[in-house]
Amino acid sequence: MAVSSQKFDTLDGLVVTGPMEIGGNVAVDTNVLFVDTVNNRVGINKTPTVALDVSGAVAITSGNITGLTNLGAGNLSLNTDTITGTAGITLDAVGDISLDADGADILLKDAGTQYGALTNSSGNLVVKSGTTTAMTLTSAGGVVFSDNLGISNGKRIDFGTVMDMTADSQGVLLNANTYHQGSIVSYFGGVKDTNTYLQFNGADSFQITTGGTVRMTVNNSGVTIPGALLFDSVASDQPYYETINAPAGLTFNLNNGSAFTKSGGGSGGTVVFTMPSSPGTNSFAWTIKFINSGALTWPASVKWSEGVQPPESSGTDIYSFVTYDGGTNIYGSLAVRNAS
Image (cartoon, rainbow, N blue to C red; front, side, top):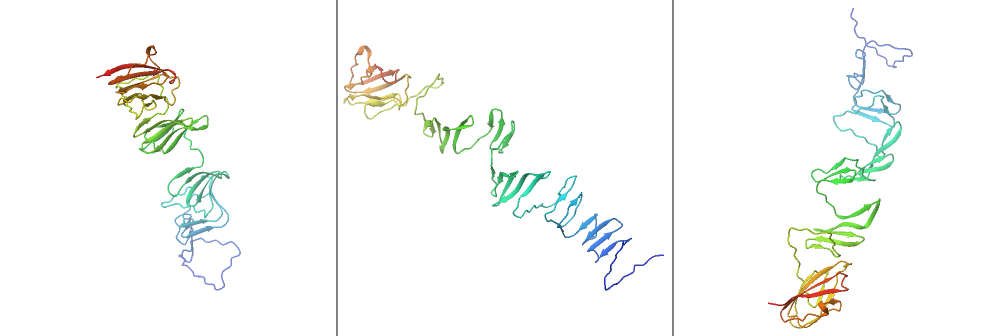
């Protein structure tokens, strides 16, 4: 015989002091609370499709959720309590997953021990190792490391098509263009040698400095080497060219080169040699082409063949000189006289 549903009305409420067994579904205000006894499901604000199905916010103010395998909720709020799971916890969302610590750190722990943290600092994302700042991701997209950036042997930092930096046992290999502004300082034995560096000091210009002294400057005007240039050997498949120097007076500065020409106009005068800044004990030679030089007075350091100064002519004379002791003794000879 079919049993029809019955309606029970009470104005004073219903108090059950002992066990109560309900054999069918239970609906409170249609679906505010719906117990599906056929499929063993409970729904809040909806008909359940899983064991616990909630439509709306869920607030957990005390206690733990242990052994969680599936929780479907429109909004889940955790207030100071924890969610634990022996098999791990997976957050799987179609949209964004937001962690809002409201001014506090998001702590990363292992077995209760903190090994890192994430936090906000003036709009920058700060990554911590333990409780110490390790890296900052700036709001502009930059990265700032609080300590050294280590690269394992054989690994590289890839800058796309601009440059790759690959670490090996000898240091770092740069396999494409690199860009630098400022100085590259020598570093040996864990000590910076601030007196020895390569400096990019402007567009199309750089300098090499050792011991605090500029040894070479390269720019659009050429290469300047202020000190002595030492060679064990020199080989070239092109002829060597010397810039001709024409001083205003009779002072021949060997810092400017080794080939000179002088039109004396027959006035003559006293010849002065300015030796190179750092001649050392190296030998060097130079030539002077005089045109109608007049009577010349040579330095006492100049030694002539047989101790006799060659006579000047009213035409073109070419003199050759060489020294082996930085100019203390200069050996001279008249190579060409009165050429026409």
